[in-house]
Length: 205
Image (cartoon, rainbow, N blue to C red; front, side):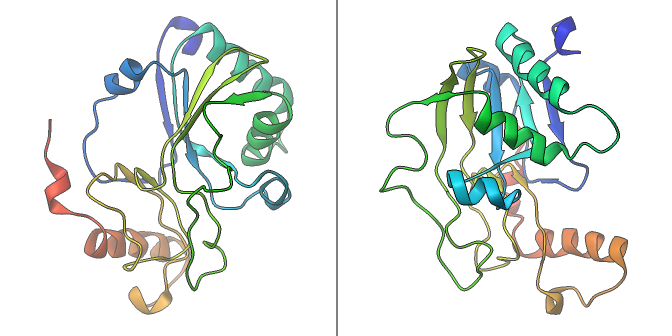
């Protein structure tokens, strides 16, 4: 599809959209690839580099640079045993050779989460932009409020009205009552809707 000139929004089926955001706005911003922050997986890259990005939510502009980036992914992710989240961050950090705008996302004054959940502590919050010296494609990482992903954190760390998509996981059991895997996933959606979905954000533009 990218080779045919089609721009792609790639998202996991268990992500929850809070409001309508026209995708042409991302094209107007001018970047080739938009990423969301992941939490800590793969942990060895997080510990080394300070953050990881999410392979399960991204916007890809059909451009020569994006195609070069995806070809790197394709070359590394062959066979049935590919963990796309691991390969995505391996390519992101080992092969793209990113030149960040400004001080970069992990500068000394970067905003990071603090709280009583060790999985969330230290996660970056702010957006970042840059360019790959390898593929020459431009990069934007959405801020964590716009593309929300945390372990638990509901309701005390629900996002603002600016939120576009939520990726709720590891919601506290007392909020949904338990169940088997599918029941838990559906129940977490209900918890998100109850505590974090702001009706004011549902306006269609």
